[in-house]
Image (cartoon, rainbow, N blue to C red; front, side):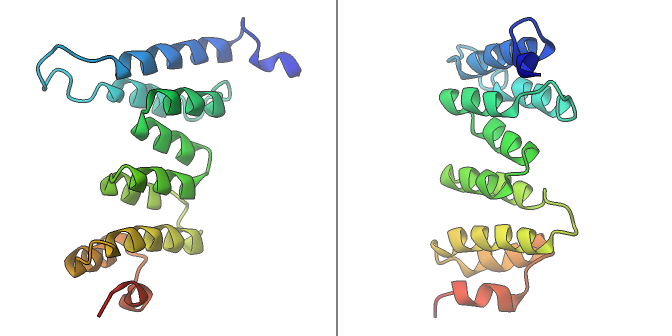
Length: 156
């Protein structure tokens, strides 16, 4: 019912954990670089483990992660919510091409049109650099793109 997201529920406990992990992830670290390797990792592992949990409120988690600027977590959550275009877009805005590629592979194999659209968005982003090598490597990596697909994005 309407109280499925009330305070004394599993969802509320998950929400509280997400807030704590997010706040911890964004804390400045005094530790050496290796120790702080990626403070967002704990939150990412937690969210990935909750993927099938019906008590997870991904929109709440997304708002929290946006507030703390946790890009990888935002991309993961967009993916969990089936919002693959948003996932790729956020990754590209932060110049995280590897994360964008990872997100472009998320839609099911049968959804070729969406996968192609996501990869073309990455091509468009990379084409701005004018680096033909980067674009040709995307063709190899994607397993979706053909030379014909990317030609319109390549300058003379």
